[in-house]
Image (cartoon, rainbow, N blue to C red; front, top):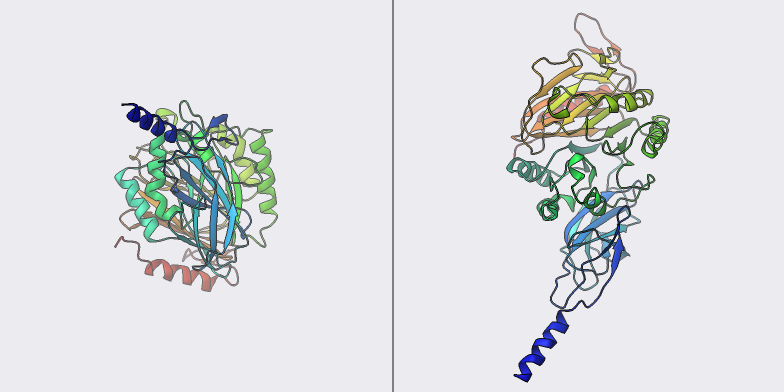
Length: 452
């Protein structure tokens, strides 16, 4: 009997935490990280990568059940000779979240990497750095989640990787259940670990009892905004600016001042980086109607539209409303004719923003108003995602339904475009664009969108 008591006591001691530690999320309170025990697994999971504004860097993030070190090994092709140490952060959840940064990356190259603590390692993942000699291709959508439709969207992305993906908020729909976040990252790890997902928060990232803690801890992205809530980065000919419609963006706010600086700088650099794409969650223009407060957000439009127009933003990609909608180039609800050709398939960039609502990645569709506003060029209720192909001269924009059918498409042209004879409704691209335009059109026809 005495021996059994001793064994029981010994097991109890072994189960006590072997290491203890705390970490502080950048924007949260101080939380005790879950501590490792003798039988706890520190196998990394939920691995995902993100771009930084330095093209020679890539950030990798992952989760473990207990507190442990953060290490990444990486290198060209199958080599893992480079390494970097990272940091751990926690919030009120039973996982530890790690980040590390891979540096010294070479463009147009294939890399392998694994993450762990020096003894427990993940599988080996791969990614490719952007090739400056090629157009940049990227996905865009919002309002994802874990529905059957969302899984189809995820499968399309996994099977057809591009340079990056931008997600305009309402990511996992955890709504306070932190295990849903874990499941979401596990489900999407095959694409998140090989292609950067660049995200901004939506209203569903503001969780009861947690605020934005889950979002900010899981998406730790160093950038010059000094916050995980909004950021800017460049890939090839596109300057991306992600904003938070869930945080103060009024004139004089920190976000507004940062955004004004970013837009002004980007617009002054158009000779080198011709395209300016902004993405956020709640839309400036929508024909949803006024049900449930999803009408045009007058505050967003009043505070930000002039800033977008003055700095010649080309595209704004929104979520929040669960349908697809494309506006004409629009300012203050008035369609802008300058730079518009034919029936809305071709536009000269930088005259007025075109707004896209793409809350179509997996949630149930919303109804929109019976009467289509004049500024609304096209809309449909379906599930799908955007695909973009941007070169220095032009940008092909396509909305693909999740069955592979292209529901909408148009082309932006960089530079002045001169209208041709009125009788044929055509246009003459600026010098050097004709070949690019023909190439994009042919490529679009040849692309195989359907799932295998």
